[in-house]
Amino acid sequence: MAMTEYTKTIDTITNIGTNATERGLTTQEFKSKFDYELQQFVAWFNDTHKTEFEALVSEFDALTAADIPITDGGEHYTATDVEGALTELFTSVSSGKDGLAADVENKGGTVSQAGDHPTFDELSDGIDSIFVGEDTSDATAGTGDVLAPKTFYANGKKTGTMPDRGTYNITPSASNRTIPAGKHSGSGVVYGDANLIAGNIKSGVNIFGITGNFAGGAQIASGSVWATGVGSTFYIHTGVAATFYSITLNVGFTPKVVIAIDATYGSYSTTYQESFTVAPAYTAKIKTTGPSNPFLYIIKENQGAAAIGSTTVLPVWQFNTNYNWIAIG
Image (cartoon, rainbow, N blue to C red; front, side, top):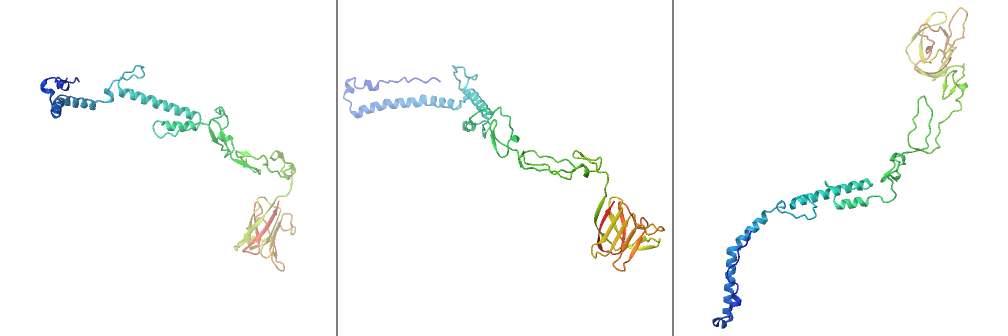
């Protein structure tokens, strides 16, 4: 906007005293003349330029960064206004900071970024966190290769996770035993047994690489069983039925000899013997006795409640007591 030119006289002070009338002006008259011309200028300025200045201020107030052109002699921007240039500058700086943050982390540093883009202070702290020393980017050890909680450097500082198992011993069993991963002292053993020899293993059976050659020998089972107060029918050697209490033994094989003795008194017993013969006329091989006279009965096997086999049932005199037994096959 063009400004209106001041067209009134500007030589008031210069002309004062140039004629005879004004040479004798008093100080007050001189001041009055000067003030008059100044008042004239102020009045003119208010009448003409005040409105023009207010218009200029309004124009400036309405301006935005997008309205202000720039001259980019170095051709650094594609934008032609201040707003576009600032946007390009912000984008360029943000991209640069993001790239620098990625480089810091690639070097093993840590950038603690709170916003969308890291600040310069955050970048500075990230740079300080980079381990400065020998390049470890080609290290092949992982956390599982290093004993916990030891630390090591492999593209940055890391903490091992390998457990320390110490001395780990193994007792063989019927199934595989897993050896846990981790560090072992080297002093662990797989326990052996001096009885693991071929002569103690059934012929043809292989245990831990040892094939047995044992071909015979007795089978033995033993235990303790409760005699209930429920009566069962058995047959004595003459074929007469008789009622006795009973015990049931889980032998697991067919025994040749069975001995059962009450655990309370020690005076009641029942025995079975495969080779026992009362007389040629009888086939009875079970004997059960009481505490006096002694009471003795010869009982037929495998008749009535009596049973000889993997599960053996025998007659007894006393009830509500345990009977300790042993069976030999």
